Structures are given as C-alpha cells and as structure tokens.
Image 1 (cartoon, rainbow, N blue to C red):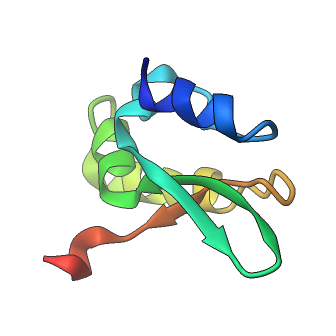
Image 2: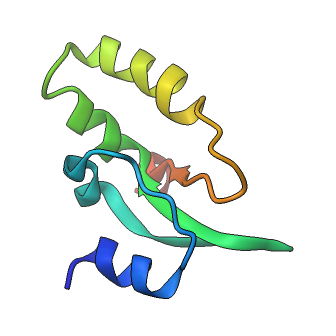
Length: 86
C-alpha cells in the first residue's frame, strides 16, 4: 500500500496534489490545533518534480503561484521546507 493510499484510508477528506508524480513528495500528515489533519509534502521535492519539465526558476515560480497559492479549503495540503532541518 502506498503512502497516499494509507493517508486516504485514514483521512476521509484528505486532499492531494493532482499528479501521481507528486506522491513521491508526500512526507506524512500535519496536525494543527483546532483543525483537521492534512497531507504534508516536502516543498523541495515538489519543486524538483516540477523542474523535470521546466527550468528550475520557472518551477519555483509555478510552485509559488499555482501550488502554495492554491487554497482548496480547510483540507488544503501543507508544504514543509526541509532545507532548514539539515
């Protein structure tokens, strides 16, 4: 069973990024006080996936406007910037 399938089984209203390629960037579930848990993605990995089909700078811009900037309601996924954890 994939990470996406396990999360979908446990979070009824989970929202995922629409392309299966992004599943590799799922790092788990984020919990926030007073809010439902949401899918958590590794920000850098999502941009890396986008950069397969466009220049890195374009991938970062696309991510900022079309991914981070896409509010899909209370179950909108979060993006964790893991660069600071190294």
